[in-house]
View: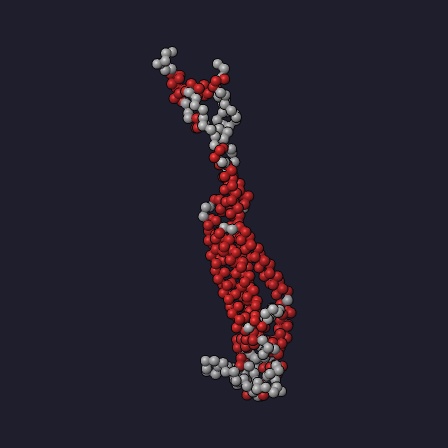
Length: 363
């Protein structure tokens, strides 16, 4: 056949020739089965599935954890500021500097606010910066709070009967030390004003107090606190501290027109029994919120781990620039035609590792 003529077979083979990159090779061969990120998502659990299947899932978790902990941080910092202000006003910190910690309710508010603010800030910054360490610290703090609350709830349930029996003794001790502690004085006044009562069993229980006893030489002898009065304000803007003066020296008919005669123990027990379910409901709500925060933090940590593993696997599969395969040899049309005729049936499916070279094919 002359050089200027073309064979129909050659033209057909040349027309049917496919680009070299259209066929698969061992480097680009596809293997059946799920993609690597799907395996990582299934192994990571719901958080991994949420992060991989829904691109907005991890962002939603971050925003939810950040906003909730930002609110809790503000509340805990407010409680911390109130506690420090109370200690500063009463001088509890200055009087006990270098000594033992004062037995002050404000100190509990300070410690609680400090602990809650630290945990909330760890969760807030961990979600904002995608820091797994801070999120784990936040989860550990929430778990510690849940354990402490569970222990406290179990103790209250176990000793509830004994607490009711000891309530009368606690009230008598509070009346005896009424002037010794400003916080105790405030608490007793609020109980007597709120429940409209006086004393433990009756108003005569204030005889146990050293200052209100009728044998006391002070100006408060045979008197009662202003919180025992029926109208402590006496149509004024402030409490009249002298409304109960001399009330213990009056008979019941004259005293009942000035002060409350009923003790605080029966109405206080009734109030506690009627509000125990409400307090339990509030405690359950707090536990549920903390449990939800813990689950969200765990899911976000898992989502961050999935993203990290996916990025690492993608970097390994891409490889460094030196691993880019060399370009295909510059074969002629006849060489490609010989290769097409002589290649094995499995070539292109990843079943044969190397094609036969055109120069070594036997006719």
